[in-house]
Image (cartoon, rainbow, N blue to C red; front, side, top):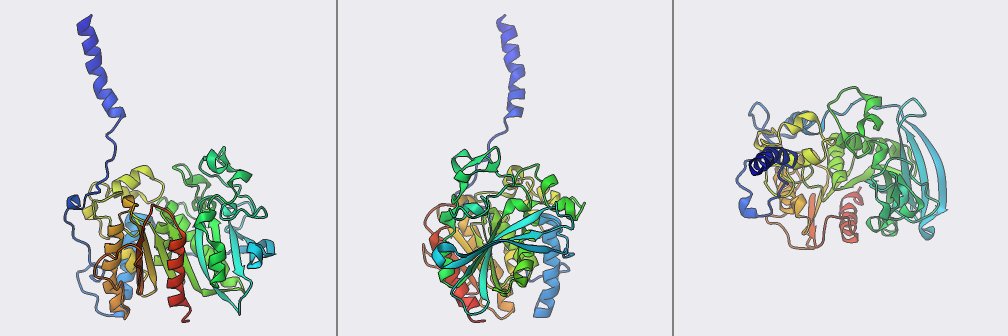
Length: 420
């Protein structure tokens, strides 16, 4: 009897181990980062050096192709025929500071197809067209402010009963749940419009969201995924802003936090119409260097979020050094336009030092194009923002968007957009 019991236990052990793989343990020790060599953004695939702005345009096309092939997937380049319709307008929003509007951007010929529901705040005190910040939101437009007149989002959302998301749908309880991330009054009083839409309008953020995303309506190619869809949607929102008589579309800053920061960088890299690109805590596969073994890794992000990137990216999970590019080069693709990278000291998962080093490594491209890049030889201290053509700050606190972050984004925009 005892021998039988022991044999049963021994047989069970390998199966139990196979069902429970070891948990991912991130490295937060700089001494264990290891050595790595970054690819040179100013060296062509054939080994020749980029010495002129004209040569950079060729190298830029190479880098865009490498990111599309190996990380984000190939986004369709054909611009769709969009239809715009204003649904609601409130000229006394935010206590009379702004006019709030809701615009439907129809993305496909079929009226039942996917749409972007854009929420737009335009300062009432303005002289002519105004610059704007464009960013996606996580909880639906109604979550950015408790105003009961904002249309309640009806798209799929991640279950969160504490925030009013029940059966994957928003309820009235979810109004204003993201308001702390959106200091709308402050932004509008500084003279900027704010445009936002729910990222789930383009791709529901779960492993099986692709069939309900914009992708099947545009391409049967399996090569792009959620980050590409969200980036594509940011460009479609800019298409609308080019038609809006209140907005100066030449002065639109695209901003993104976390996964939205990854999408904002990819949108800004591909679409040179964006005047400023802002990454807030975008971390792995965003602003942070992939080759640094610190915090989240390529293997971890591809395992946790397989629907974000293309299939080929997953083949680099255990061989990151084989990637033909690294994230400093997506920052370089923003050049010579202003770029801002923001980090938080307690957000070690996103590797703040890796974000700073990435911005630093992008600087030679800016310098080639006559700009100063990141004007910092060492990582700055807390709340000591660098306001060069590549801006950077690290603040106290956790993975989030705060009033302090927005104050720096506004100061950076004042510096680079008010001169135009």
